[in-house]
Every structure is written in C-alpha cells, then in structure tokens.
Image 1 (cartoon, rainbow, N blue to C red):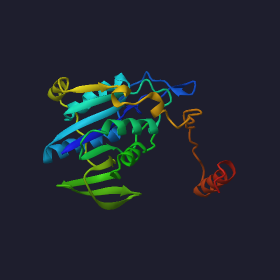
Image 2: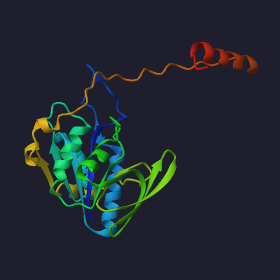
Image 3: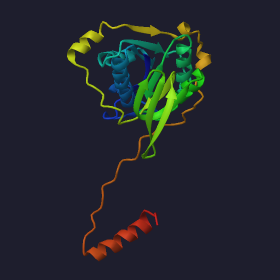
Image 4: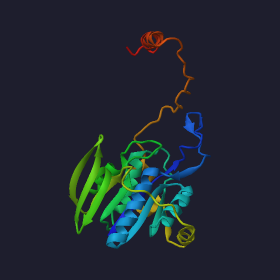
Length: 255
C-alpha cells in the first residue's frame, strides 16, 4: 500500500499560551498535532500488515523538520516538508490547495490525517483535500480494516458508532481511540536521521502565493477568562439549597 499521512506542527497545549498584539507568540514548545499521531501510527500498522510505504507530509516552515523526523522515528519511510513561508495570509484553504498540488502527479492508495488540529480545530483540511482530489473521505474513524481495495471502517458519530464501507483510493481522518501511538525508541530516532526528507517550495508545485492566499480574516485572538475561585456554601442542607438556587437565578442568571 502507498500510504500518505498529513501532519501539522502545533504548539504544545501543556505549555503556557501567550498572546501579544492579537497573535499567539511562537517561541513556545511545538509538537506533532496529537490527532496526527494516531494517523501516523495507523499508517505504520497498515504498512506492516499489507506492505508498501508510508510518507509523511507537512505544510509549514523549516522548523517543521523536527516533527517530521519524529514521525520518521515512529516508523514512516520518508517525509516531505512543503515550505509555506511566502504565503502571507494563510488558512485551511491554503493548506488543502497546496496539498492538492502536491498529490496531483502522485499515486496513493490511502491518505490519513488527524481529525482536527488542537490549535484551530476546524477539521477542514481532510475533507477539502478529498474534494479537490475527487476521492471519497471518511472522518473521525476509530477502526479501519483493508482487504484488497475494500475498506471497512468505524467512525465516531456523536457518541455512537457508524460502520462504513468504502474503496481505495480513500482519505480518512483519525479520531482518538483508533490506536495507541508508539513512542520512538532511541535506535529508531538515530535511524530517522538517515531517512529521506525532501523540502519543497511553492515553485516546485507550480504554485504562486496568490494561488493559495487564505480566505479567512482573523480579527482578534484572546485567551479565555481566568477561572474564579469557587464559593463554599455553609449552614444546614436546606439553607445551602436555598442559597444555591438564589445564586443560580439572580447571579448566574441561568434559570
């Protein structure tokens, strides 16, 4: 099987997020988008079961090479970094169209991406790319079985499970529960340094910056308000209930 994995470099949500002048300061720690880790793990398992090759693709700046090397250490065979630094206004439209140009002359059986990214959480890139490539897609999958060209999948559907059958070529997006991503071992980290990683520019894809300018305008970004300390109610149980009802009605105004 010829499997491609779509990756994104995201900031670590466990680190402190700092916003300056309406933009997120980019000097924090960056990681592989966690949902993409499920995609990488599933691709490696399918490759090991059916044979073939796993290629990881990341659209971003040169700093993304670190995350690509981690994916190679997890078991991917080769990597591509598509440099988007020349695109001033950038959004999901930009990513999907850059990826569509990348896949235009490539043969693939399966494309796997994360269901959403933890920074913007739009879940748009996978479905947009499938539409541009004119192939079927199934989102939020929690199980996948491939037999020849036939694929049986289970997907998360608002707390329930939906069973889907499809054919290759296919694009899917991974949901939590699909698998348990592996940690790269030290030997595999060393091997990953010798695996092929190619850097492409927009010119290599016959694209101009104007072709992939974003369609989204971000007006402002703010952090959520800090949580206030809770209040302990004292007295008899009946008095506590009465006070709680009063607070919910008069102060919180939810009833």
